[in-house]
Length: 217
Image 1 (cartoon, rainbow, N blue to C red):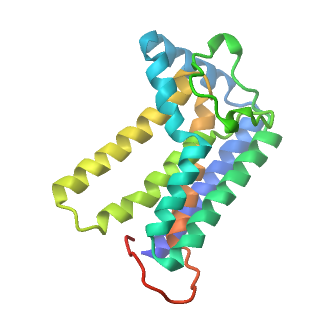
Image 2 (image 1 turned 30 degrees about the vertical axis):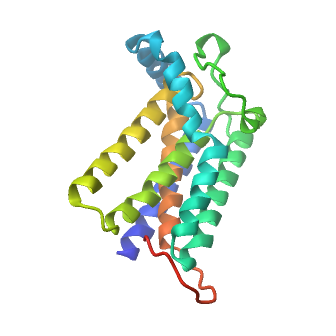
């Protein structure tokens, strides 16, 4: 099973890097603008505030805290891989937003309503690719899925949790484009990288001195 996860992680990383290259070459400009306008033209403006509130769930502050909480309950050998994988994904996000020529969305399209100021919102490397929200939420979904599968919860509860995770992921990705916080390719690239490094976190093991463990995956 690990072999499949390794190849899946490699493939997702390659796809993410390839998308980043084509974005840098400005091959998706028309697609990005058309999909953003189509989404904003389809969904009602009443979603501006709910989506803006929802997007806070994907902020660096909350997602990093959640990953540390997940690591606390994970097997001891999986804790560092979890934290390091997210850290590496975040580093790649920062590099991408520094070197990949993807201008941010124009102000006249932005529908994000700033309700809760966050420190992470101040950081602006310059460009837009990839979406950090997409990276972090996808990473968490990938990491949580096996924890749910290996838990002692009833099958119906597990299915409900899977549906909830997918719903959160879908709304997060859609909201980032609808609010014009990111282009569609930013979100796709972030999701690819988040899934890749989520798999890396699941594969990795760093053996530490033995102690009582809370094994959830």
